[in-house]
Amino acid sequence: MVIAGVVDVVDVVGQLDRDDCSLLSREQVQRALGKLARVQCWHDGMQARLTRRLGDLAETNGAILPAADIAAWGRGTRKDAEQTVRRASLLSDVPEMEQALNAGEVSAAHIDALGRAVRGSHPSARPGSPGRGTGWR
Image (cartoon, helix red, strand yellow):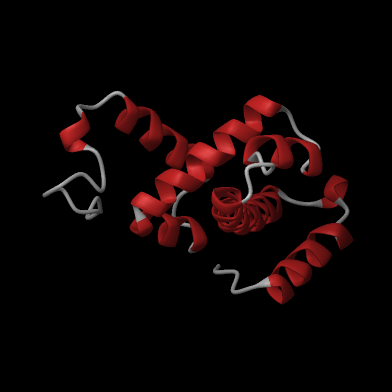
C-alpha cells in the first residue's frame, strides 16, 4: 500500500478510526497495523521535508533554531527534535532512503539506524563525501 498524499492519509485514517479494534480478527489487526505503519512513513517523510525547509530558512534567519521550533510546534522533546533534524539531514544526503521512506519500504527507525552507522564510519565512507556518491541501495 502506497500513500500518495494527504487524501490517501485521510482515507486510511478514516478507515482505521471506524474499525472497532475489539472486534478485529488477527488478520484484520495485521492489515490495520500495516496501514498505520504506512501512515507513519508518510508522516515521517513529510516531517523530514518540513524540517529541511526549516533548515533552509534558518540559513538566512539566525533567529530560527530548527530543533527548538520542531520541539515547540511539534509538541515533542528537544531530543526527539534533534533526532528529526539529523534524520532530515541524512535523507538529504541519501535521497534513495527518502524515496524508500516515502514508499513505505523503510521506517524512520531504519533511517536512524543508518544515521548511527554513518556517524560511526570513517568520514571518507559517508554519503556525499568526494568520490562516494549517494548510491547506498
